[in-house]
Amino acid sequence: MDAIDLSAVFTKQFFLFAFLIVFTVVYVFAAKRFLSSSQDRRRRRQEALYTAISQGFLKATVDAVEDLVNLYKGVHKLGADDISYRAGLSRTLREYLVDIVSSSSLDVAETKRLKDKATAILKEIEAQAPYADLPVAERNLLVDVERFVRAGDNISAAMKLQDLAGLIEVRSEAFERLQAANKWSVPLAVIGLVLTVVFGTISLIK
Image: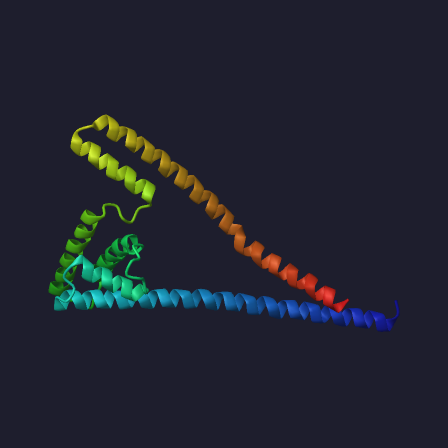
């Protein structure tokens, strides 16, 4: 191979290496930008919902579960027939309680008023849909346990609790496997993408 061929090969490799560096940097930057944007949107929705809840409680314009449901659906842009709000609404109210209790911008009277109102509505939600923030299987088992306990059927309640314990164990094992898989999913995806670009570029250069 003469000097001209070596120079051409070196030039191709140099441009390929430079392209890979630029592509990787751009890809990482875009991924971080997307994640940051998603987090910002989520935070803005949460702040908007907390502000609407506080103003509604203080002005007495939010006085029932239905009012709070409408606020939640409005902020999250859910349809009128969408029932996926149930789990999210209970969780949001609990997080809201933590936020107002730890807030330094509210006086004691306002904090107590907001806390009492949020707690009362949260109890009403849980009474209407017990354990709404749990998956369907766990929720049904807990409802059965509660029903058997009220009926005095402790044997059936104990059996349901055993079923629940087994289900929790299965969920825990599945979650651990998912965590282990996710640990490598992003690096492998990046490596696969880079290799695809590498071989694609090589095929174009040849």
